[in-house]
Image (cartoon, rainbow, N blue to C red):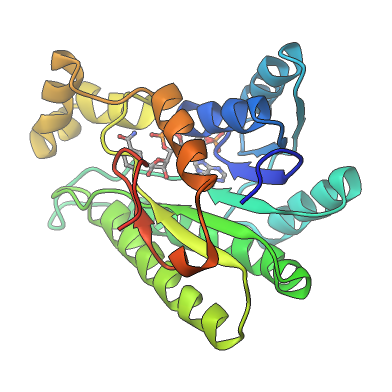
Length: 250
Ligand SMILES: NC(=O)c1ccc[n+]([C@@H]2O[C@H](COP(=O)([O-])OP(=O)(O)OC[C@H]3O[C@@H](n4cnc5c(N)ncnc54)[C@H](OP(=O)(O)O)[C@@H]3O)[C@@H](O)[C@H]2O)c1
């Protein structure tokens, strides 16, 4: 695929891996639409890109809200006329608790952001991509830790969505590509929450250990490896998972 000149929507672009992806896509000549709920964070990402001579736009949206996702795509088309790449990077892992004790509303929100959020964005751009017979959708996968069943169920569902969508696109003889990506363990707000809360330390002690030992990836490294991998991607890779270092397709 071509990155230079492509219009790329990145969800969760105000922090962590999403911000690094936005900066790296822009450094490679893409026009980047940064989305997430916290407008100030998105503006910071856009400033980083523009200060480096890149092209970016911030459109705040909660990916679980259909009307906000519709607005996101409308604003993208107004600014850049098409959508070439969608990176469903937004994720939520706030419900860290055993099944016997968890808050179902909090659990459901983890499922919703990781699964419904990606679905709504895909649903909004897919008809356009199918019509042009072109486009790449990347869904950010994640681990399946104990004490994190909401997150795990959301990500497992997202993996299924990716694989089945790839089969649907094949049936439609479409060249649109859908991929799953996994970054491995990276120091971000999400993993800091695991390391710095009692529940996180109880259920996922390995996160704190890895963060302390420095045995974790950096968002910028993940972003660079992602672009490198995407430059090689072809329609026959659709439905595949790449990671954890984004260097190879499986
Ligand atoms: N860090 C790791 O070790 C690791 C490992 C495996 C997978 N991942 C995956 O990588 C992705 C990025 O996570 P990260 O580690 O970079 O953590 P992060 O910094 O916490 O990023 C999560 C992003 O998702 C956005 N988000 C959350 N709820 C949203 C909603 N309802 N609508 C729109 N955006 C929403 C957040 O922005 P707002 O709060 O502004 O909305 C935030 O920018 C996630 O999908 C995560 O599951 C991370």
